[in-house]
Length: 258
Image (cartoon, rainbow, N blue to C red):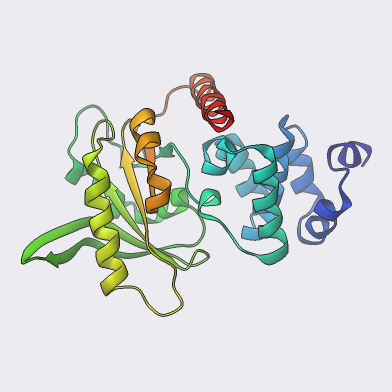
């Protein structure tokens, strides 16, 4: 109890969480060194009603380090977590992450985009679990007719908390600048033809085997409602993954300071 009080001195944060979580949840989070990560895990556990086993898996899978919000300054993270606790409003940066762990596809070495799509659909339950709570599958190879031409979006989902359609396009290799225009076309078509009253504008998720940070930053994709994320079908050792994630997180936070 003394350790809990020292790690969470703000009663406004702890009070609502104590009513929703068990003592076991707090025990699991206490060894986490980063205070922001501790607050993230407890807030998300309460919001998404994680069991003790789920919380343990999320910590072990370094969910905080992979979630987009971890790249922001601490003050902005606190604000978004407080909004989730107090108003039950979730931001896209609490939903999207990078990398996504897709080792359940069983794909190794060389494979095609279609093989990846086939594997994700065949393992849809595991894919949705990796995407996160709130995702609902809508359609595969969504057909869009624009200027008499057929266009096909790989995967279409809906997120209940965000009240948005989420368009997912699968890519092999590094992110390329032309992917932005293609995804923007899909999003504007969905906005014009598929959005229901009360929904927010659709979001796009480009899943690539590698990111291109400078291109992504210059294109200001967030302003277009587009997220770019890496995916891994083969996971390195936990030590290597931890090193890669922390190195990437440090670089992202340095960009915020510029």
